[in-house]
Amino acid sequence: MASLRARYAGPPMDALTVVVNRCCDGVKPTPDEYRAAMEQADEAGRREQLLQLLEKIAAEQRKWHRGGSPLRPTLWNHA
Image (cartoon, rainbow, N blue to C red; front, side, top):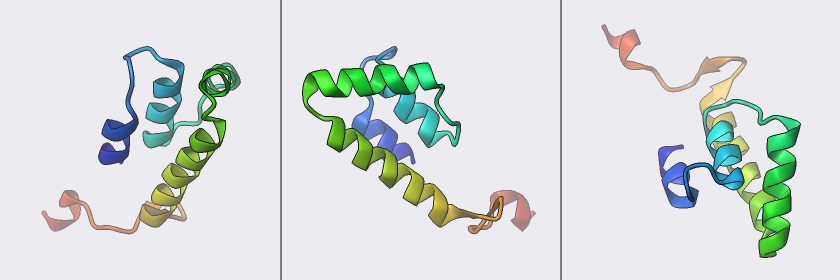
């Protein structure tokens, strides 16, 4: 997730950045945040790219979490 966030991060309070960061953190963006990001993507002519990015983030999260538990062992499991 960190690589996706670093690759697509823009200005700190940019609407697109807020939505990408929230999705990378596993938090669903609010309807207002989502709408603002879509409007910004529409202005730039990149709505389809934003939708693809959000789907990539969701797919990456599904790889690591199934049924609410991480698939990859954490450092806490090794202690």
